[in-house]
Length: 120
Image (cartoon, rainbow, N blue to C red):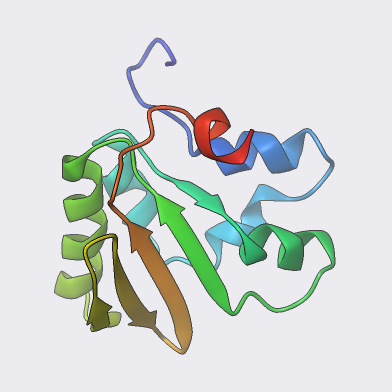
């Protein structure tokens, strides 16, 4: 964690080290969401979204992993309040959201304190 106790979104560091622009992914999420969720530990993006970024293709779906229940709830509540999303499916492992035409999988069958645990 950084000295200011705000955890950066790990994928930004992951992409930055590989010469991709972090602004590319940040434009997918509504303004203010990243800052709000970072107050609760941030989240990680994995899966096809990273492949799309690497190949400069459109991001159609996002798999989001959270370090805590609080971070997950902050993510969903922010989107709900801002009316960017509707819930399309709930299972015992994830919540599937539709966010302006994109599928967002919010994974909650486990919480991930490090992106390395999932991505590594």
